[in-house]
Image 1 (cartoon, one colour):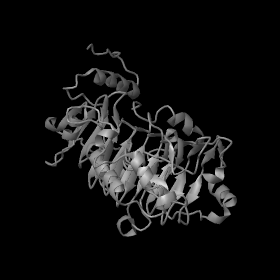
Image 2 (cartoon, one colour):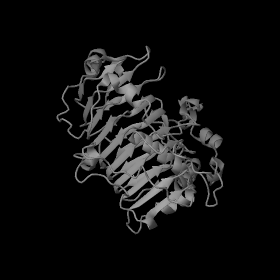
Image 3 (cartoon, one colour):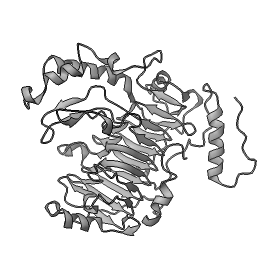
Image 4 (cartoon, one colour):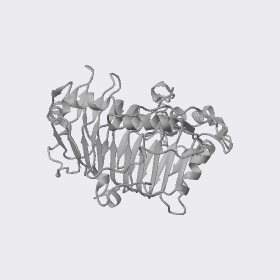
Length: 435
């Protein structure tokens, strides 16, 4: 393959990065590419820059620098048993639902112990089963089948790791990266697509009418610290939940979150990402009863992200001090629920964000009270104009009154753009392939 030529005189850093990306894209899979994106989190850039900062695998030696093109290579590169820093370059599409030889696996390949969707639906039909939790042969078979899929799609990320996509088309398909019990991790320039659950579970007690619940967030930060998530795209892609059928009157939802920060995780910055076409998107703190684990932690910064056609949880917050600024929210015309969820003991600070709301969406719906008491909301725009979103919420949803002071002021910010300029700044620069 011919290596693309780059102009000898480069006028800007952006041009340098673009030029280097072309060279990387042409490099053979056996070579670790030179890395314009082997960066560390800048000082002062959100919560992940606190207490020593986030460097990921910047100190990786040659033996721990990998270029991977399939699931087997990725899983091997993620083996952090020796504790060494590592940098992993993802090239092209890696499908997590593949066997050891790289053969694609379907849901039928995971099904075991006699599981079948038709049999499951017949066994737990509320008309005959009632509202008890499913139990018995079909539920046991569903759980066993789900466990087989989990072994393939869940990939654990060790401490001191950078995972970065090469060029513009690096993609993790069907994968769920698990940053669990780790410290100092960077994930950049990847498209996370369609982390689908073959075996959603029916919960008749979830809500008034029951619900289907699935596993596999695209990226989970679980009990981990110092994590930087930057310039990624998160999408359901080929398998949107909106296209799925309904069983028992409820959507057969095959996706969970796009990014979740849970179970005592702390010091996380998510910047310049595109979150698209999803329902339950970004949850910070997964349980109202997890105060012993989460209180004083779950400190997260979200800045310069685009949330496009997101139904809810952008984010939903429990316990944590969460700084949300300079993001662009483009709400869907149909099905929108809310963007900022104010959960138990949450301290959400939302400032200088921009909203594009269709005429069907009332600005009072942007905020949702989930047992929280207050948030700081200031200098946010709707449709290019200043909008008091907290005042609109309190006036429009009088049964969900919230105070106006989250009790803290963010300081870890490298830049704050005026909210009216945010759509023009982030829409063309957020997401994978735009470093």
